[in-house]
Length: 109
Length: 118
Image (cartoon, rainbow over all chains, first blue to last red; front, top):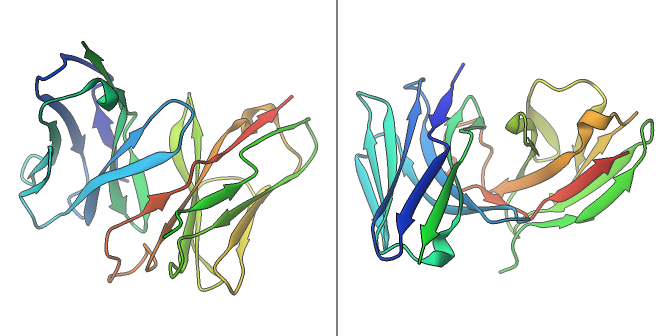
């Protein structure tokens, strides 16, 4: 079945760009998502990309998809302290979301 | 428009009891999926309901069940609670079923119901 992997931790300075990476194993996954989770809260959908796209930009967020390497990344431009959270990558596969372990983004002032 | 609403937000039960959690999807959404989030196992799919029918099921024991009503609201039930059932239970809604083509790709989650089993 599908397996989604992410690095566990990323620390950046305020104002820098953050890049969170994710790999998946099943090329038949149709949609790939990025969710944000703040402490004690649910999952907030940040953006998603259809598997036949290479890139999607939405304000400060840029998603890059390399289908050949099954690699997905989320770039956050001008990272702010309010961006500190856990970021989950997920793949839609056989009708369900398969999530990575989550990447904790720490933003230092 | 209102987002996905889950109730209750927090609850405490003891082993052997049962619990029912409720989810109201975004207006117009007909698909409701449930996920369990624990520190050890991460986020895992429980089941999806679309038009009152279970369309997909994850690898959870039969103690976990759900249903969907004609207004698309969904409930999940866990019977004979075990300590390991302590988790954040998240509900997600979408316009179409995730199990077939036509899904727009947008799945929206609620804030979750945090269950503690003592």
